[in-house]
Image (cartoon, rainbow, N blue to C red; front, side):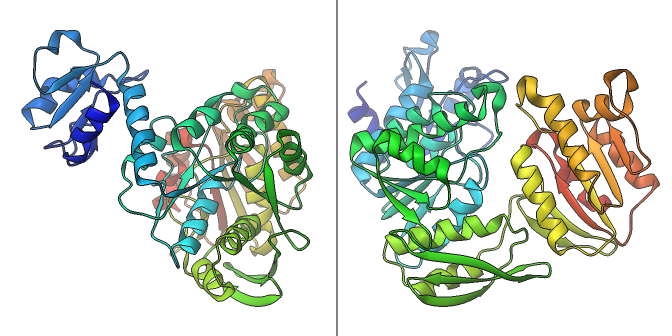
Length: 438
């Protein structure tokens, strides 16, 4: 079956399904396979539930007229997504980076939506599966804002070949996924694959004009780039007015000043706002509409969410964590929160051999801050601060737990009250589950 023939089936279907627990009837069921799942096992279930067509690698089902056997259902879905993207022909803006890409994506979606019909990546579906699913959900939108994540070299290049962006933006480069990239320079080279794709395809990169690392990388790839910042081709400034707890900011767009009351906490969001405003300028959004869109954005999905509880005020940022995002989140809370302050921090994942040292440096940095209590969760933290033979030393202000369940038991026994509490950790920690206890 050619992609063109499969595409015709897709157009007559109800969409793509990869999970038979969801709506299967009249859909194209794609039997994806990963380390912990194998969709090929559920093809008979999909057929019973009325899928239009099942795409699988199971040759024993080849005789069924509603089954198409392919070497790789994933690659077939990716090819179908690329074909659909080219047929629909929206303008595609790709976003990647170590920190802030999801919030920046949501802010840009809000800004562009003031003038254009806009599709954006749902949640954090930003990998080799999520990007095709996003593109396959395109209808008649004029814009697609596609977030791209990566934990190894070559992944951004692959995602670009599927999404074919004409514009791209890297938020920043930090110590994220060092296990897969090896070093910060490795992270830069991996994220820089977006610039390389745009350079080869005649696209444009939007670059934070205050970031010398990204400006250098853009220059090395030869991509056409527009700088976002006071002295850039996309002239915008963003400054904090105050924060209590939400940020009130002022943006100056091409000389026009707009004051914005946001629903965001944390000064690290200033860059996200700057990049969204600059993108808005590039695509012709008036300054007042940019400001209105940013002011109307409310964080979700466990990112920079402020929760006013009966006993504490909680800043929940539990979707992801790496050394730079941890530092920015902590400093952001320290900038506005009144004491007492508590930090509940989960282990930072995918740091490889750098993990023990990065976790140790983080807590050493915290020890110089005016923080009353620090609760740490995860094996690396536990070894450093509960097992003396590993070189760590305990402290009355610092308590480490091996697992989240141990922390939950502690919080039930000693419920905190009257604190500003930052809750931040990698996805593996699932720290949003402790919020009811706070």
